[in-house]
Image (cartoon, rainbow, N blue to C red):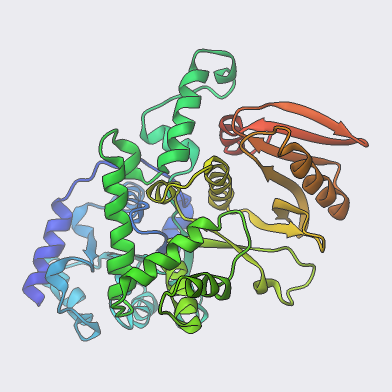
Length: 430
């Protein structure tokens, strides 16, 4: 095993990657902390690990030989287990007579990884690890890692990163008044339809084929193999039911009832397990309803997919509004917003309620078109939420409409998605 590890270490030092800088952690923080970096598969964690290495090389005046990088999903390490952990440093010492900076990719596939990296941190190693499982920040693992590590999440690209990776430079001060506006709208449509996985954003070919490959990795490798599930078809059925529910409240029990009606042989417990597995691998994310107290907050939930591209694989009729709402949810998630949805006792609701500094400060409704059929519903929900939270302003995001409505001294800003995506990343809403 030592000879194999030495080979992998040397190969990683020779590898050169073409990456787009994301600057997710400040240089100063990188130098002073160890990190657990989690997020969806193919969202760019491995490339970000490489970016970290390049930053550290520059800031600490290091060279390639100062870094020990291992991807634990390397097929050559299929027999590697926790008993081999100590061979990693031993292998490096046989190559170089110095203390390495440690970069471990997808380390969650090895049992007891958290105990090992904690021991390394206790011995003053700099350690950066990535993984594609939310359990990596569970209370149990967190108690093992203690205060030695900071956790961050890497999501798929936000809109500005999406433009950057496509080598698009738009001046936000003038884009709304120039020919670049057409380009911006076209890119927004691509962002909504195909999502923002880095590799898929770079290419103009075979996007659907790549998305299908990604989904298969989530279902077959991350879920089926990890939890030893044989009936993969039932996982897909649960996933499709979540897909059909975007924008609506749903629960594992409701999914079970819907599957039971069409005679799918599955238990309530299994549905609950499958939903949790789907959440654990970041294939979907959940949004809780707003409550003043934490009591029963988990009983009502909405689910959104971790990337819009997956929605494209399960196309539905009259689906534009769902894709738009999923886009807004993800953009807020990537901005690390503390958000909920709100629904009163008679079923009137507001799509996104955003809290900052322990106070609700913004409300967002999402609708593809603000027409005769939707206008009354969207305004009713937003105005009810504005009254409840005692706010004088609210926002409705549409596909292409821009307007300002004043009702009873309350201002409702209607903004097109292409404009909101750009301004939201400039820390403005309007």
